[in-house]
Image (cartoon, rainbow, N blue to C red):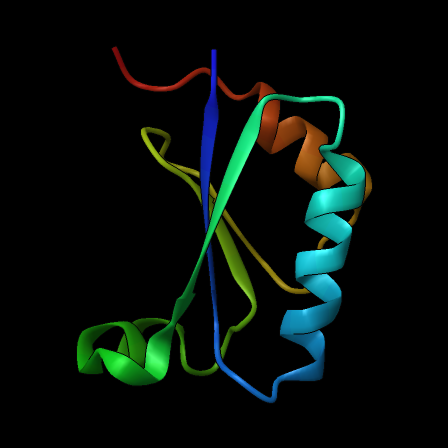
Length: 84
């Protein structure tokens, strides 16, 4: 089963770059797609995530992780059962 993740951030954010690297390293053994979304392009996303980026969310699950998160947090997110 493919795990779809959304990584909210913005260009020039060193924490966002670090988070993207961590996501790819931590979840390399999983079948994962990661879509990076620039929150600056959407005012609703900017209002929701502007003070918390980077944020990672699994599509189909309620949980999202705000920075700082680590390898264990990401593995736990990958193992979260999505909605039916």
